Image 1 (cartoon, rainbow, N blue to C red):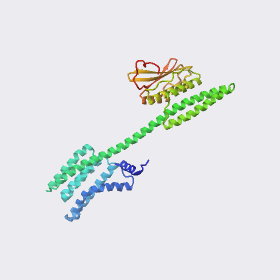
Image 2: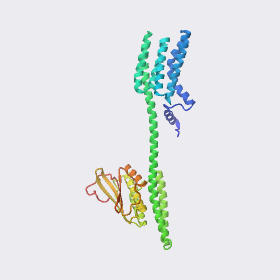
Image 3: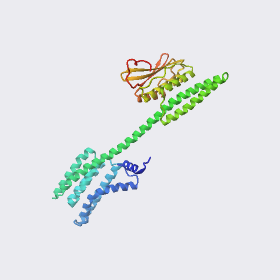
Image 4: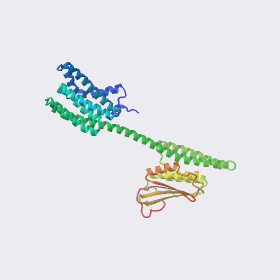
Length: 399
C-alpha cells in the first residue's frame, strides 16, 4: 500500500527511520544526513595538511584518522539496521576513545574534536544506562587531555561533548519509539482484520445455518406433499424461493457490515421455522425495546436465531418455549431471552461453533450466555443490558 501526495511521502520517509537503507539512493540520503555532523573532522584534516608534523607523525595521523572515521561510520550505519552485538559495540566504542586520546596527545589540541564523535557513538550505540556513564566519562577525558596539553580551549568543548552525547540518546529513543509505533500499528491492523474475519464467520454461520435449515425442512415437506397435494407443495417451493432470496440479501448485508437483525423480525422467523418443523411454538408478543441499545438487541436477535436453528436441526423436540423478560440484577437491568425445548439436545458433547460465536457476540454487547442440558430438553438463556433502570413493576414481567 502506498501513500499518495506530499503527506503520504512524508509518512513514508518517517517510516524508514531506524531502518537500514534498502537501495543505493537511500544509502546516499542517509550519508548526506550524516555528513554535516562530520564538521569536527575539518580541524584534524587541516592539521595534517599544514605540514607541522614530521613524516612519521603525519603517517600515524592519517592512519589513525582513517581508522577512527571508518570505525565511527561503521557503528552509525550498522546501528540503523542489523547492529553489532553488545560486546563488539563496546570494543569499537572503546577503540574510538583510545584513538581519540592517542591522537590528541600525540598531534595536539586540533584533534580534541574527535571526542565529540566518541560521545555521539556512546549515545547512539550503547545501552541507555551505559550511555549515561560513558558520555560524562568521555567529556572528563577530553578535558583532562586538553588541560594536559596546556590548552584552555578544552573548556569550550565540554558543554558540546556533553550535550551532543545526551541529545543522541534522545534521537535514539525517538527512532526506537517510531519503530515500536509502526509495529504496534501493524499489530492493530492485523487484530482488526482478524476480528473482522471472526465477525464474518459468526454472521455467515448464523445466517446460513438458519436459512439452510429452513430450506431443508420445506424441501422435505414439498417432497412429501407433491404426490397427493401438489398445490401445497407448490406453496412450500414458493416459501423456499422466498427464504433463499432473503438469505442472499442477508449474506450481502452481513458481508458489507450493515446488517443488524431485529428481535421482532427474528421472533416472526422463529414462528415460521418451528411451525415448518412441526414444533409447537410458544412465543412472546412483540417486545418493548425502547431502552435497549441496537447492539444489545442485535446480539439478542442473533441468540434467538441460533437457538431456534439448533432446535430445528438437532433437538427433535415437539415443543419450544421462548420467553423474554426484564430482570434487575447486580449488574443492572438486563433483558433476558430464554429458549427451552423438550428434545434430546443433539449428540454433541461440547458447544459448537454457533454457541461459541454467540458467546463472543454477547460478551461484546456486555451480555452473557448460558446453555444448559435438561433431563428432557435443552435451555439457552441470553442476557444483555436493558438500558434504563427498572421500576418495581417491571422486574420479572414480560418484555
